[in-house]
Image (cartoon, rainbow, N blue to C red):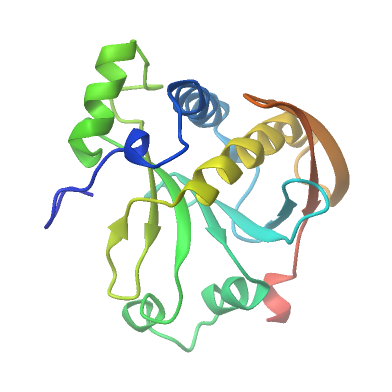
Length: 203
């Protein structure tokens, strides 16, 4: 994320607090340690509504291919369908839509501000190769600071996926539709979770 202009850290976003970022980083570390890519891949996209009655977003666990690890989140079902199109080259696809992502990298992938915050508050990455990077893609292929709505949404979504993972790891993926009660810095909230959101091969 450091290429080009300097990108400010998550705490520079209005309304984003130290407790929120601390919880987000803790959830991200738990997500990495849980290794969800061992039982989930792009055949198992989630429909997530947080709060439960809100509009859906669509999340795909990254990492089954052993290259990029994390969670990609699409704002609309059509955006998710676009990602499954095999007739569109990847370099063209990134110019057609924007999505949110959490991915794990070495420390130098984080913004300077986020690294400084981790050191200041004693927050830990899961491993030296798993510093959490939150961002949103642009139509010119860059990754920029996510807006406030994305940051708050990711807190609830990560908590819900983490609640679901033990079942997936015990028995492998099975279709699921449930409403989970998860803890956020604002208190207990309900998150609707359904998977698979669509059939990848029917796109």
